[in-house]
Amino acid sequence: MKQILWFRRDLRIEDNAILAHAQGEVFPLFIFDQNILEKLDAKDKRVTFIYQSVLNLKKELQKIGLNLAIFYDKPEAVFQRLKEKFDEILCSIDHDNYAKVRDKNIEKIIPLKRFNDAFLIDPQEHLNKSHLPYKVFTPFYNSLFYLWESHKIKTLSPANNLQLHDFNYEHVPSLEAMGLKKQILPEFLEQKAEVLLEKFTSKLTAYQKERDFFSLDASTKLSVHLRFGLLSAKQFFNALRPYQASEAVIRQLFFREFYNYLLYHFPHSQFENQKPLKIKFLNNQEDFKKWCQGETGVPIVDAGMRHLNQTGLMHNRLRMVVSSYLTKNLLIDWRWGEAYFAKKLLDYEASSNIASWQWASSTGSDSVPYFRIFNPYLQSEKFDKEGIFIKSVLTELSQLDPKLFHKENGVQSNLFINYPSQIVSIKMSRLRAIEAFKQAKSKP
Ligand SMILES: Cc1cc2nc3c(=O)[nH]c(=O)nc-3n(C[C@H](O)[C@H](O)[C@H](O)COP(=O)(O)OP(=O)(O)OC[C@H]3O[C@@H](n4cnc5c(N)ncnc54)[C@H](O)[C@@H]3O)c2cc1C
Image 1: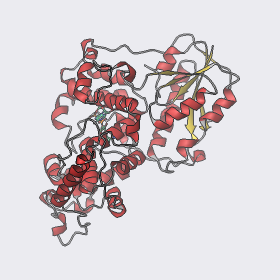
Image 2: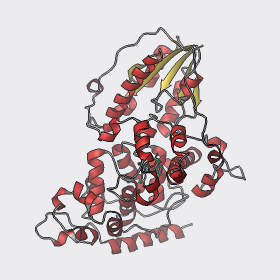
Image 3: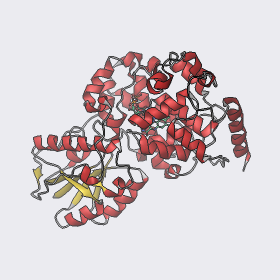
Image 4: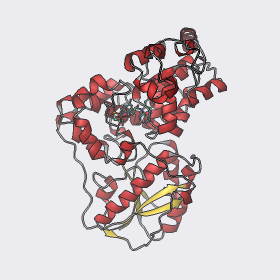
């Protein structure tokens, strides 16, 4: 058997399904997909992270007698060239829309064997008593209780006796040759997933209480590693499960599972409201631009968005605040916000992003009720009382009394500070959103 091991979002050696199921002569490869790269900004931070991770993977594979061929091409073109030499391709499943279409086309060239690798569960196998997919998180979560009963979920080791196929492809394309510029990444991304996990264990008991505070650094910071498979969901679960206080953080991992499950069972939710609502969004282009640039006149929203633009990162609660502000206060379609996050987030994961945006805009099947709208000023008062996070990003406000950040037009009342005016009043826009959602609900 001659197999291609197509690494995609599984850039690791341990607990890697394709390495574990491989047999005989193998040819591991990674493709920097031109179809994807040509749509990205030259300064996309994710590609720098993937690039470094792929080079590390190459070294790790060499340690176990294998290697990694690195292509910069369209996947179809690569496999057309290899089809005479290989019997099948092993790869991990990806449920996002582009990946599904791509894989269907590749299958016509060389047979494809897919493995559930990026998630704990296979979405096909977990249905409710009526054999239908769960639509609500809690029963879904409860149905996975069996995973807690054992202390460990079995992980996989690379198969023994693999032989490297003699097809020689040593060229490694540079980032520049792919039209990209190397970016500076947040410092924690230079660290291995195991190191971050280890550091997090000392913060585990405080996680539940502290995770919502913007400047406390209380969460795992592992979403990027999980996204590109430098750590598997099983490894995450196994490492934290033995600790008594692990339920809160593992619950979050199960949200990741749930959102992947929803996208698998309801693929139309990538493009449409999961609830049949016809909301009359205002979709004002100018307002959207201000939101993207962090110039809404609401300090916590602006700090969140400017931080995202600079670093590719955003705290979970901030994501909730800025998405609520966009879809409710500004009445802008969640798909616009989803697409902007898709461009900017280092941890962008279609399933988590789409479901979270539908949750925030009350259009998903398991969403916050439409009348529950975050007041951004109350959120900043609660989770950034001293304004530490806001001041760290909006440095022009660093001398101000933080109390001003938590009041409508508080900052604007200081005539010496040049800060944008609010786009909308929070009270008026809240009532406007409730009315728009009521109208949408009452339509048949
Ligand atoms: C509007 C919006 C968009 C989002 N888009 C994404 C996205 O594109 N990619 C992404 O990975 N997460 C997304 N999230 C979820 C969440 O914000 C991030 O996973 C989290 O901030 C990552 O930080 P962490 O690794 O320190 O998380 P931790 O709190 O340490 O959680 C551990 C892991 O659980 C998963 N997780 C945590 N919270 C959630 C959640 N609410 N939903 C799904 N999975 C979760 C992540 O994989 C995370 O690494 C989004 C949330 C919102 C409200």
